[in-house]
Image (cartoon, rainbow, N blue to C red; front, side, top):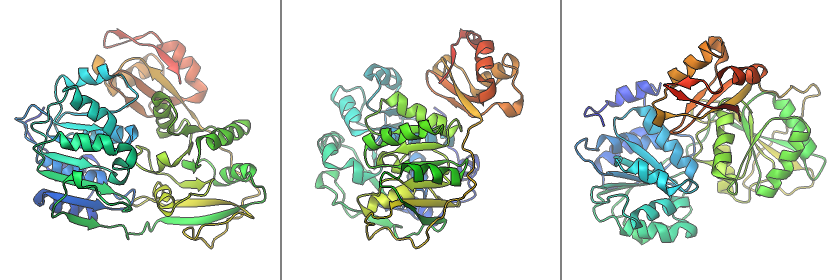
Length: 436
């Protein structure tokens, strides 16, 4: 752990951000000076940075226990926040814990206690029961996406966790909606509410696409060809529908990933990795993907199945048109389908008669070594340049994990590269390299 804290300017420079937006500025002032803050702001406005900057600033480099606990409703959001903290380069150790991975793996990482613990309610409660985490120095609690974290399904664990934290001095609750009453066990008193929910996503355009067929599958494919090679999410209400849509896209040779609650964690993570590095441009997802995902700016989202509630429509649309980027939300409507009142769009898109091809130039390779093996991105790049004979512009995104890594390479060369670098050594460790 570093003994020198980074200045806010140094952190923003590292993240290539010129200045905080008004919501972030107001949140920083409130969190720095008030015990309890409720932060309400649309998806994509930078709430994670808004609560991380002031809370990290209050951490002590002399403390050897967890000081900041961040509770989140999903493993993807936990991973994302951990990654943001790493990008900030705060000098403080952070660990994310969540269901779907071995508890023993958590114990190994937590043996050297982090200053910041991020986790889902079930896994954090499990750690507190087994006393693998000390609570005596936890002074700050963040409930990110609290409307989800405090739902009935999490209420028992949340109540248990908060009841186990005797020394909390500061509480920060964030959400992109406000549709629930905050339970008394959270302990909010004299809180300040920062409400930016009326902030419009000015870069978002909502368009309707009319389908002559009830199943809308062919219209969806026609729309994707109309949009072309751009990153986006197709939203469905049910995982069975996702499989149905996925099969049809496979039939039409449209590369994509899937993302829903019933998937194995490794499959969900790899779908996002391949999306981030461009191996596929499209994800078919339930509303689980409407918030808290570590993915780049999206050019579009498609409502293949119409959302059931207004807040779902808001969260889905919030995945595109974020911050300064342009985005389009397409509402795919069967011509006889009822359109809920909360979906408003007078613009109807007519699909192009000359569709654009949808194809990726990248493939993803898996490497069986990561941070715990002292392997860096530079080590991986060196292997692919020297042994794989890649040019600089042929090496895509490298994602380095604790025990493995993923690399994007030209699809046309993927097999040849694997033959050259598989079972080669990085940092004296022989690594397997395979196509994902």
